[in-house]
Length: 271
Image 1: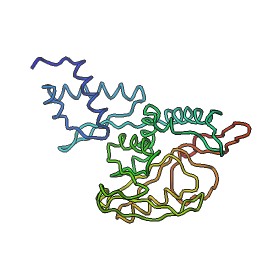
Image 2 (image 1 turned 135 degrees about the vertical axis):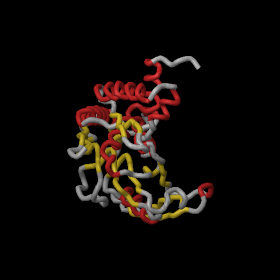
Image 3 (image 1 turned 90 degrees about the horizontal axis):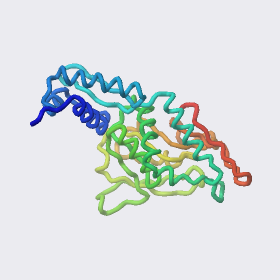
Image 4 (image 1 turned 45 degrees about the horizontal axis):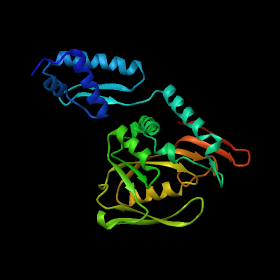
């Protein structure tokens, strides 16, 4: 095989690390892949680390010891998070997004990969210390956001359904009361989706009173999982008391003035 030049090696190494966030690679893996000495790979890693941190693209973490190696963590700085959330709140506050009933049209944003990928990394940054094993959401609009979060963590995504499906085998179903309309609804999760004792992070797109999030928490607990956090993209300012006490909202929706076409939505203080 022809000798790989340094520039090519570093490009390939960066691509592998970025495509596999939070995955630990031993230096021997890259040494063998590029047929280069470990000292040479270390020089490449140092150069890549400097560039990634200089441009606020995350960080490279080196783990020492026999089982050590290098991994890419797509964390966001506080300044970058503020920039992302301010930009998103500006988009959501556009007057043409207000639809009858005082609602905000969000679907195009939620299904925009370029917008949701950095939001997933924001959630990963905020919940990194929770060390989840799985990301959970409920169908359907929360899926792209939860998938982006799962991608940033490099973890499996579990989707809760409104009803059970025969193609997924036996399932656990619960009834829950929606916090806003006080209606009784059902959600279901296949028994084999999450092993007992797993740590679960719940991610959803919107929270008003917290009934859906509360239902997902109860469903996860029903299958023996531990919920280590709950994150939502947008939470309403009212009601102040949610059915979920401990959650992280990135944006707070204060008011929607349908008559004057004005929306007050801003980054949350705790974001």
